[in-house]
Image (cartoon, rainbow, N blue to C red; front, side):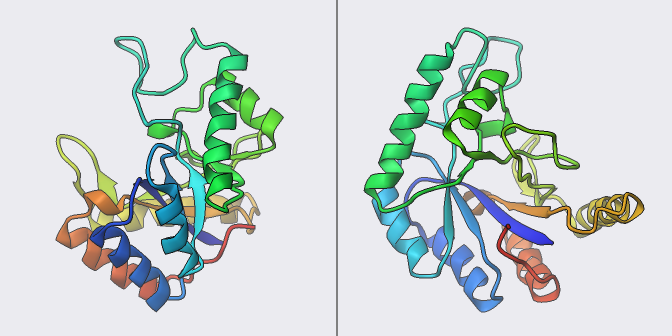
Length: 213
């Protein structure tokens, strides 16, 4: 099963409209990971019009990692009670917009153990960037196929690199007899260059996308 997640939404934008138009034209369900400090009311209305799902994308998408550590919002100094409070605030923002999200996407795909514990206590599913589904709790629904390369600047990964990774991941699922293991397409609408948009359009025309189970 191929499913689709897009990250970093805060407000409706022409780039988001273009992304949702692709979703609609190709009948490809999409999950939009939205930062709670954005205009969730407006995003919810935009997504509702095309039957797109919303996920929580962190708290404020701020890097709070100590110097020299991988970027992330939650670190070793954070208490579980404080992370639970932040999570509750985020859930309330979505609730006021008429959305009951079931998926949490940590910025930079950094799922600190304290965050994992908080998500398990809240009954939320975790979505990072990975290879195969990790053991829970919380249960995990990852993305695997990022269209972008990020260093030294955001740009299209390239069709060959993207498709070779997809082929390898599909082969692993076949070899391990994990036919129902989800394979997640990852996009970042705000960072797409023209080659990314062109490839995404062509890929969606050829690859059936389903809503995650």
